[in-house]
Length: 316
Image (cartoon, rainbow, N blue to C red):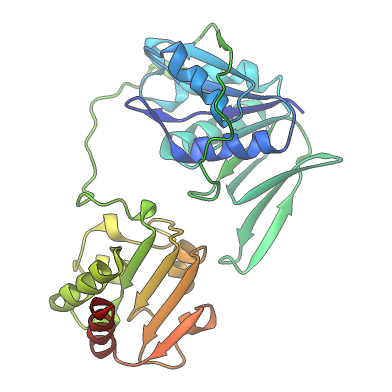
């Protein structure tokens, strides 16, 4: 199977989701080609992808490839047409390029993929459906199969320490791909914390009563050595910033421990945190949906339970 992995990168760093997909592809055996597109790419840096399982690295280096996805589709297309599978890790640029490539070559695309394997008929992609209540296996009727991973679905750990040979390839950008230009970039407000990287998250919903009680959540998070997250309802209400939102329209997280405080557990929120290692729910409503998938449930008023829990942790 000829496999290409599109490597998303920004400011000299590869997207961890792209690295995770590359490592996963390499674990299935066979040769895996990494594709790096951009401007001013260093060969030694690109060759370092060998540590994540790349057998070789194709480098498309052209000023037109800096910033916009459509020129990247142009650069990737000729190589994708010769491949059986083209893989993408989660990311804004990756998603745009994956969709554009699928339309360009007329291939099927599987998004939000959480796993993929090789079967007798080719690659098999696995993704959640119906609000993560079922898992669907998909095969592809034609090549290349295009797969876009879900955020944090694949571990981005090196599989070795070697380097991969780098091959520079020619780039031809279509006229229509040059019609748009990058006018500028603005950094989204993050508050200095990336909740997708946290091992411990203490999340809160409307059940905490109001924004004046957020410090109680923060104290518990500090005691656990974690970060604070939130539901869409409290973000929409203006209690906290969007960068803290977990759920279908927010961020997908997979911490080792997720403490849900005053969160009902609506399916839109579950989609964003169901892959946590251990889920602890605190809610005064014994019938709250979150208790159906929590590993540990505490029925009680969060404003009573959280301070007690913080005090107990501080005592240890």
